[in-house]
Image (cartoon, rainbow, N blue to C red; front, side, top):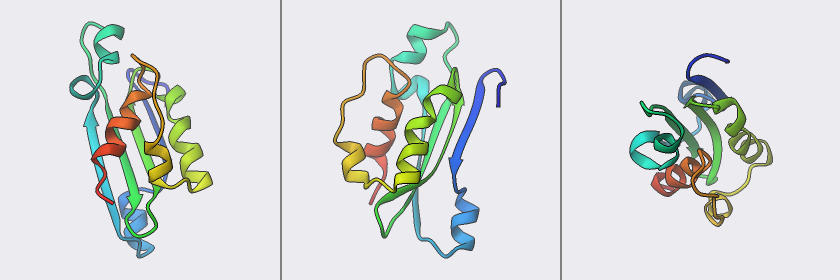
Length: 113
């Protein structure tokens, strides 16, 4: 959704996963506290990123973002969800600095699976 800040989502919500009987683990980041990019991009940094994973299979099943250009950086999560990439594989990468993409790395590190 093109708003200010942008809103983007992919995959399932926690409620949808629960209705399907999926045991989940989730995390949410305040972007201004977790990564440097909000401070280099705007004067009043804001935004959040949330990830939802299937705790048994160890794959990402949902993600949402509220922040500058969220519609541009949600694609990382969309691909991971669609391809059912293992969380271990997603954690084994290096994000460019400073970018909003770094938030995925920080959030993945906080997911307990």
